[in-house]
Image (cartoon, rainbow, N blue to C red; front, top):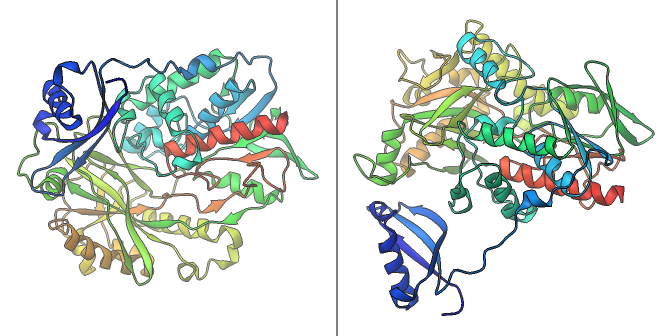
Length: 520
């Protein structure tokens, strides 16, 4: 047997770690004597829970001899760039950091500016918002080193394989400390307890190779005139100049959008979605999905993905966090925004998911005066309305799912993972009518699709509003550069070109490669 063969296997959860059994099944499937197999590797792993007995689906490579290993180590390709041509990168999220790594590989020096704090220091501000209702508008669940994804599970699933090298992005994460399982799992995640260390390791790589990173540094002005973008000015008055600037500020940097508009840099309104976060007991979701009273050993906390059409619009689950927590994601005082996260073990007794409705023009009546910012102002108005219901803190308005459907305030609420606490409120009235009506119908549809999903044990929590940026910063499809601002490269989720950690990372890599061509 000279060549590697690939076979597909089904194994019971209890047999997932039984190497001999897997080897025997693979040998039988490939028609190869067991004793002649010298190499076996699982290259893809997923769960099939459609039948009464869940299985793991494995894609396995096998051969007589272990093949010559791929010696690609991406960190070995990085150059020393301390004295190289500088490129400004605004934002230290996945788009900004992966742009920085690619710039170094291309022989350019990234100067990365982030409004927030280093990933470990950022924890103090997360504690402040959860325990003391104090929102630091520059350091929170959305802003700071690693970006919004750092403390929302580190989910790595993406459909955007054509955007760039997903293999390179995943391997860079592994080279910085992520478990190699992310190269195998169909829906990989790292976990909010482990991702901060990986982010810190990326920082050290960038600094080691001569890049610069400046925290607590936010942009207040652009050096832009006559169609040329030449740098930025920060809150301290310091100026950073370069021939190329990457704008990777994330989906919640409203001040940057306003600055772009004030400077005459073209923006576009972008579709987005808004709704609630729905929290169930995790054992209930496990029972629905696996059909077991108690989850079998080796089966992970179960997840779901739901979508339907209601009155001509999509309603869908988003950012599902099995074994997770609901967290406060406000980026300014006076607003209630919630998100979800999970630790690597996904062992919380709760499951939560954003459940949102596509926002359309009919929702924006009264907001048209804001022009390109109509979506953004609509989003902000809902967040303020949720906040105004409470006592001035980060308690989130909530209803039992059954009461939400029936349009009445709950007399009591189920237990929750949300640390600031929930307050019984008329969420059905706080949401815009068109959003509520569709959510109400969709939840009942989902209850028919997943028997047991529709229950008084679930909390409906407002509001899930930061699903994506409501603004797009347009750029040329070939050069990745803003067509009206030479030297400006919009990037990542905040510019409207990504929707998660991996897609943002790949967009950062692509932008860096485009900058190399621009400067050549």
